[in-house]
Image 1 (cartoon, rainbow, N blue to C red):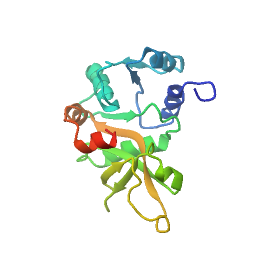
Image 2: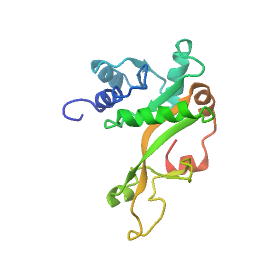
Image 3: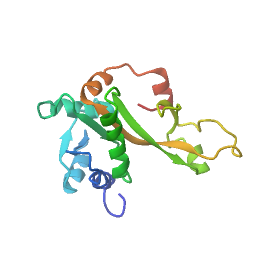
Image 4: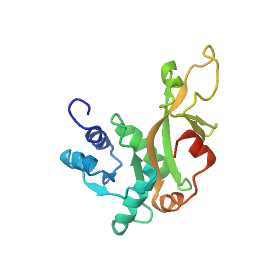
Amino acid sequence: SILGKPMVAWTYKSALASSKLDRIYVTSESKEILDAAEKAGAPTILTSSDCKTGTDRVKEAVEQLSDSLSKDAIVVNIQGDEPLIRGDHIDACVSLLECDVSSPMSTIAVEETNDVTFQDPNVVKAVKDVNGNALYFSRAPIPFQNSSQRKSFLRHIGLYAYRRNFLLSYSKLQESFLEDAEGLE
């Protein structure tokens, strides 16, 4: 609870600030979370407890909504523990796919300078190439630089946008060694 409201209510309210989302659903296997979301005004989708990741959960929700989603739909996964997600971050993530039809998915990371955050294994860091494509995500402090050299790093935001058909196939891929080692999806 944050200021008397469940985290999911704050995340839903923050997602409403996006100008790019036509529909927003809260998906969970937990009746308690869905009840809290419904009290906040969010439409909900009950998913199976067999889902291992948020991506699996969103894929299952997309399958439930399949008749109402176009094959070209962009589906956005906002992690429920992102109550401070910004509408402009969501819009930027969606815009990346709108502008590049060859990209099957997108995500974003923001520049940070806080050393405590950099060292925190609960904060996912990202490294990108010169074209802005993600190279690696880690809970470890990456890229390595001694503290006198480091000016900033990229903090990954729990936000993913997928093309519908890519999402349906992506979730069928086997978990990789690095995905498992980092505890990421």
